[in-house]
Length: 289
Length: 350
Image (cartoon, rainbow over all chains, first blue to last red; front, side):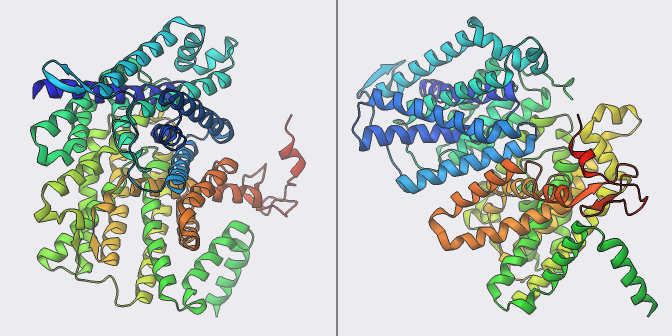
């Protein structure tokens, strides 16, 4: 029981963390609450379904193609629809909802509303802490942890990461230092969507797929991001782990009450927010006017 | 006779001078005279629902547009009032004359309960935290299916009005009166304080105004109007389901208000009366209905990011540079102070 909770919680938590980090990045740099974030995750999963299932490409190749494709779609939407109206925060909010709905409806038209599943890359299972875990899950966990580490390295060790962090800290001063903030925002959007696509590509074989699958992870990702503190990568990872473990514990301790996993996660989030109104590792945007 | 003369002069001097006022009056009159143009019960039903949702969207605008307390969980007020009304109707046999006000009171109580902890939260944190409340409420409803009716909800015995035509008039008149009250609230001294809290809360506090009191007041007012809409909706549909608490319901209010124009009560109402019938017309292409709807919202907001009403108003009217009174675009001099309005001057500021 305990081992089950730990292993499954770790895997779910890392998926949420990957989604939340991407969401947090674009919020930090461009102050955009991108409600279409998990829609890109859904589209990437469908991309793999299409390339690997219908066109019979190699699974790895189809993963790479769909990640590149989804990133392209995300950047195109950003440049044509979000960037021109970035000053109007509320309009941006609704534009991202509209983008999510458009993606959902396109997938519905192309693939229908059936429940789909994506073939695994490797089969079989392995023992871990005395419980049996499918190798696909272990592979997913490994890839996600590698991706998170890569994001950390990108942010800490490269010039682009320095620019992203600077723009997130103070956009105007970053602009005065000669950075092209609009370009950095577009690149960050690309990175963020790519992270969502990677998450989608990795979990596609683990869950069933249908066009409305973006809404419930979206609610959870929003909760994770504000629990950890907006714009903080470390906070997102820790928040994701907290909420994932809460969910998994609820499901394992009372299987008949598993519909309560989201409400209970919300209660935990609210309690933490009442103690720390800016999230666990968030910065207060008090000076921003 | 003198009343008629006064009315004639009022219309000529106050309404006909501004295109936006003419549009508003024409809209209200054509809505009231709708039964002259159609006797289709389906049309009455659509416009009655539009009236209910217009109250709901305007109440979101009151809280989020004016006070800046952006709420992603506005369906909480709507759903709580709907469930209160239907429970009172089913268990205690109350009629809609009692259940609708009591539903609104329940929504106000909920507004206080969530308003107090949320006062500490700011900006996106507040928005995303309010998202949690309807989800918790749905959890509660599914935990006690015997009391709350579970997935199917609770059915209501009393209709809102005997026929569809009555329904239409009840909802439309409610929309007019409540919309007018909300508009007057935002126009009053309280409304100015609401604006100020959105623009700069610290400055308002520094001017000796108790912002906590006003923010709670905003939560209660907004909850009251959304609650009336929710209870009316439950009586109209004759059932209260968990769908009235869904995330989508909250987002619909936001989409309508922002599409019409945020921080103007009439914008939210216009947004509903444009988008809701459009959604029904799009039923002729059922397959791509949502796709077209999303594309319309995306494109309109791309080119009119401040909303439809503000965009139209800016095209039809311009402000007098001297006395700041609005004038029709066709006038060359201000209608109050007769100072010339030069279009070129406003356009090309170097």
